[in-house]
Length: 196
Image (cartoon, rainbow, N blue to C red):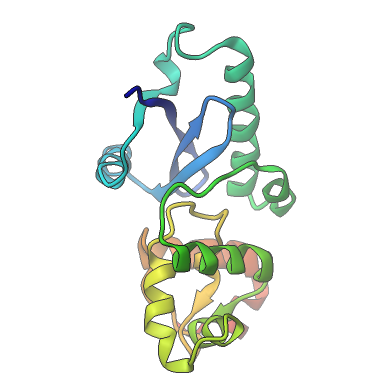
C-alpha cells in the first residue's frame, strides 16, 4: 500500500512560529504553534504516528518527482493565506482550504462548531459550547478535551474558548501563545473578556 505524500513547512510570525502540513493539492491538514522549530517538528512527528498512510516531506526540499509546479503553487497560495492569519488578517481564514484528518466524530463536530460559530474578535466558554451542541453543562470537560485535541491551530479557533469566568485555561500550544493570540484579536477588549 502506498502512502500519500504530505508537505510540511515552518512559517515565521511576529511572535511565534507555525508548522503547517499540506497535501499535494495545497489543502491544509495540520497547523501547530510554538517558538521552537525543533519542538514543532517533534510534535508533528508524534501526532502523525497515530495515523497511517501518509509520508511527511519537507516542502522546501521536495523534488519535482513528488511535487509538481502546479501543486507547489497551490501549497504556496495556502501558506501565504495562513501567514495572513498570523498577521491578524481574519479575512484570510475563509479562503484557506483545510480538511480534518485527525479526530473522532465528536471532536470534529466540536471543531466544526467553533469554526462556524466563534468568529474573529469574539470568545466563548466550554459550557456554552457544550450547550450549543446539545450536551449537558457537565460535558464541559469532555468538550474541553475535544478542543484540546485540535490539530488545526488558528483555523479551528480553540484559543477563543475560555473558562466559565473568562480564565485562560489550558491550550495545546501553551497558555502564553493563547494569551498572545487573544490580545492580538481582541485588542482593547482583551481585559473585558479575559481574566488573567
